[in-house]
Each structure stands twice: as C-alpha cells, then as structure tokens.
Amino acid sequence: MPKLYLVPTPIGNLDDITLRAVNVLREVDFILAEDTRTTAFLLRHLGIEKKMYAHHKFNEHATVGMVCEAMAAGRTVALVSDAGTPGISDPGFLLVRACVEAGIEVETLPGATALVPALVQSGFPCDRFCFEGFLPQKKGRAKRLQRLQEEERTMIFYESPYRVVRALEEFAALFGSERRVSVSRELTKKFEQTVRGTLAEVAGHFRLHAPKGEFVIIVAGKPKPGREDRNEEEEETEE
Image 1 (cartoon, rainbow, N blue to C red):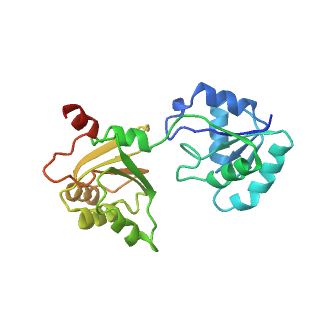
Image 2 (image 1 turned 30 degrees about the horizontal axis):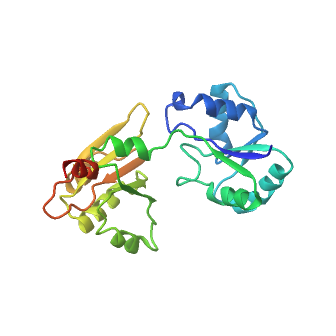
Image 3 (image 1 turned 90 degrees about the horizontal axis):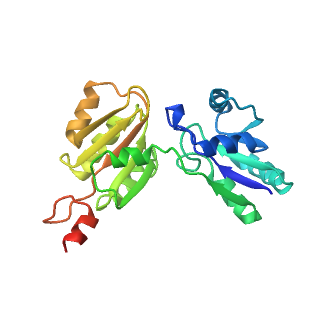
C-alpha cells in the first residue's frame, strides 16, 4: 500500500535513532532527504543502502507532485530532515498536505526533536507552552515579538549562533531584563550545554563566550500577578 512515513532522525547523537525508524528506512522504496549528504552519512552508520532524492525548502514545491505520483503508483516513501522531526522548522508540511488531499496514508514516527529536551530541562512549567521556532530575521519580526508580550505560557525559540545574542537582547527589551531564560545548545552532542539565568545574565554570558552550535531558547512566560511561576497542574491540585 502507498504510504508516506515521516521519520525523525537524531539531532546529534546517532544512537538516538529508534529501531522502528531503522526498519522503516530499510523497507521503503526511496527516501526524501533535506540534504542527501547528511542522510547518506546516517544511512552508512546504519548499514542501509537506499535510493534518495533531495526534498528541501528550495525545491519542495516542484517535487511534491512527483512524489505523490510515485506513491499513487503504490510506492512507499520516507521523508527525513537533516535532524529532528520533519515539518518542525523543516520541510514537510506541503508534502503532508498534498498526501492528505490525495487520500494517501501518512504515518509519523515519534522520535528526536530539540524542543522537548530543552523545555523539560529548563526548569520552567511545561504543562502549557508555545513553540515559536525561528523568528523572522527582518520583516514581521517586531510584530511577532509584540504579540508575545502578554504570553503567560513558556515560550520556545530556535536560533542560530550568529543571532542568539541579538535575540536575547530583544527579549530583554520586550519582556524585561529580569525574565528567566534557559538556553540549550548542541543537545545530545559532546559539547552540550544549558545556561540558565535572567535574560540580562544569559545575554552577557554569550557576549563573553562566542556562541557555537544550534540553540534552543526557553523563555519563561509572563508571571501572573501575585503568583510564583509554577506549574498550573500544581496550582489546580492545591485548590
């Protein structure tokens, strides 16, 4: 039966691949990869040989039709990104939508993603949160940030090492320099690090220590008047 599999791949440590993901990658007819060179390295590590095609943000509009035609003819396809779960700040949405509209089954495997470990180890409430991913670099950035000014949920952002200090400084100006933040970089890799503190403190840290790697920024939500920043489930239990 034709099917599209969305297969999460490790965000750093290759041992984080699941057995189910390995089996799917072995069994599908071909793999769509954000960068075939990156996926080739993973496949060699797993001892898998499989036909691959590039599917990234610069060609996804052009390749969706071809892929849907292949699946309509009975082929099974796996979509992977360079790291993490396809569709989360990576290509995937357009292909999934096209498959759904065409009546082609879509199956998503659970697996690696950077936002969950960064959120859980931040120490902030994680019963309710909002994922903002990468902020616009220019157009629309200010408006997007302004809409978050009253956000009470824990906020999650992805950022590159070249813009992490700028982002922290903007957050400090908007949310207040004393708002708590947790910044994780290089998750699951050799030099994994999490820096916690106020926005002012953590921005200062990365001014002194050149940012390297991929970053996840976790910002505490706006505190409720007269209440500490606690998990809402704890508050309901006390009531």
